[in-house]
Image (cartoon, rainbow, N blue to C red; front, side, top):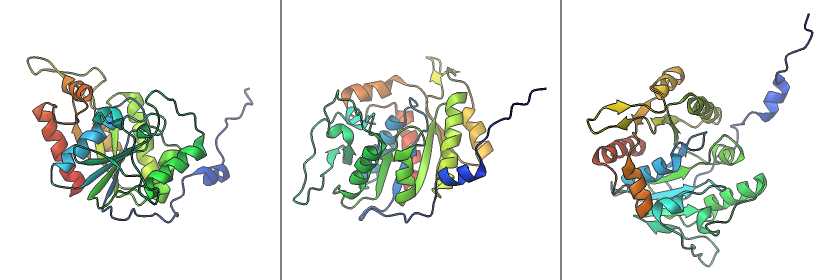
Length: 272
């Protein structure tokens, strides 16, 4: 008879490591709303979605900012074609880089493009807090935060210390991405941040006859939304106009018209 015992985390250990929500969450002066864009898994197009939602929102005559919180893999500079160094005021506060009427801050503006970040956790957290407290954001209707993948220290710093208005989870349809997205939802719930909904990216491909094919599976986000009782915001298809925008360093403008409409509709739900 097998006498081996199955090992689980003890309740005492769980109580010590579970994210606590009793922190005093701070607001950023002048910022009306903060929306966190998360994926819990890398490679699902989170930064691209975040950038397009920011630009779509700005077209509603709103003042919009975008904070790239992915310290190890900042993507926002490439998406906006912005590589200059930010300036600072007399109090050493950073002035955001402005592209397409969006105020941008990213670690990618402060390091050489090909330099790897080899920082440990405490340094990453310090950098994130600096972006929150030492940037001249001015008056913003909404600040989008492009969170790094996973549910680690960087995300918990935001979730526990910043008064985030809502969050959006980006996923692709396949099982591995859905599993991680599920963890992301649970993390936001533990830290009392409302999940506005799920956006399924890379959902399908349209051929010349407008027939759909599903290279990453089908209806993964539908099942997740049903199981977690959250809203499905939309499904964004794979389309070459995303690559066109990235190559030109201009977000949103060169997208297919139907995809622009989707981002417009989602941004309405975010801002309302």
